[in-house]
Image (cartoon, rainbow, N blue to C red; front, top):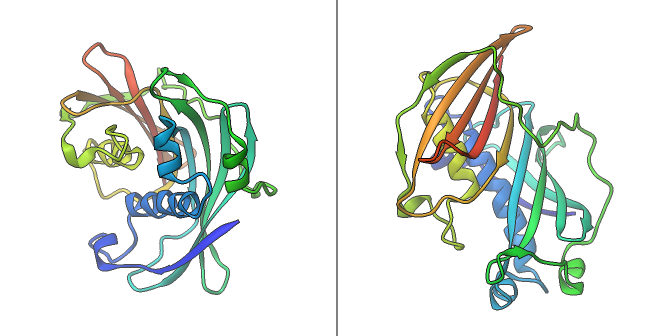
Length: 242
């Protein structure tokens, strides 16, 4: 397990002074990056070998959003490394141990020079000691786009430089921001999220959001299909709200 402590900043909250889900994802990504940089398989190690971890899917369950200035602990637990796949949990807790959010993620180690998945090295195994996975209601990483739904089209999105990460691809969290920004109502309180990453979008690409809205058992689910100019999915995001 790897953890770090923080305090919710003004730049991370919404108009009601609660942490945004985009900032929660940033915390989780920062946590995994901090663990990576502690070595021995640092980002520099990966870059020298033309490899990087590519996110396949997110599943996040939010029990409560922390407020401005609340002290929190963010943690990650790698629980499976096999072939070229990595699985890791994330969590955010209060100082008293209240579990604010828990997440599961699936990653692929990818060789960008060869254009194929890469085998996990001994240094990578050493960098990520495995532990038991956290208890949560694990969902399928594949998202089914509902056929029976209210369908809406969002405004097209041009990929700009601020969307990119160090691999010159759209950052994982940016897809979530794009999906939320495409909704007619951007003030919804999200209680659960899944994201399935199909391929990487690059600088200058245009994404076309298709939104499907379904109401079931008192909850509202939005499935946002961020498509390319060939109508193929780049990232599918499912947001559940109550």
